[in-house]
Length: 221
Image 1 (cartoon, helix red, strand yellow):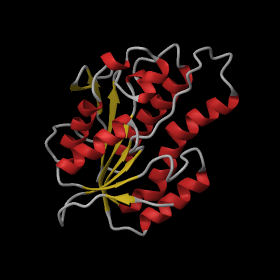
Image 2: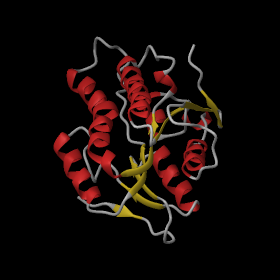
Image 3: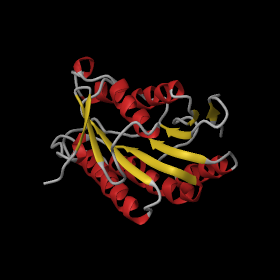
Image 4: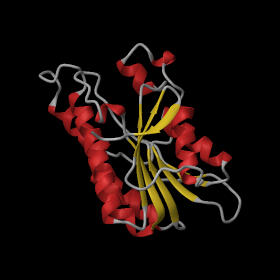
């Protein structure tokens, strides 16, 4: 299992990005490189995020590397089936394994090595549940809750959730025909890079919405 590390100046921030081959993940990697960050990236070929054994091995490999300042979870999965009565058990399990449980497991394993914080890439479907993708919405809502709970549990770290609206990615193309009309992944990446670089006013426990190319704080009712 390999870890792809991108060169950066000495004393730069050490960042781990999962889902780095996806539309949002790859944009995040590029944005962080431009901010002189040292990026370790992984994709589905490096670790199967539905497999606890793969996650455990991946975490052990990360532990052999240098310190980690930030972890950005950008991996995810959505099933194209919109009828909950027709969605297979395997698909439902995969949705929660990849979107939710992998993040909890990785956080548990990597937490002692994280120096600055964690950014969770979620979805606006977690805030306004999508009736067509019920399990996906639920899996992302669980991520939001976990991130906020972690912010309270680890006050020395910065834990922020970013919820993108419709974004021009392969995942969006899989479920909708409006991907080309949606916001660019770079908008999400810019928000991530601003947080990591200390150029953002968002604080630990915040949920940030990135919609139509702009970011804003989500305020719960």
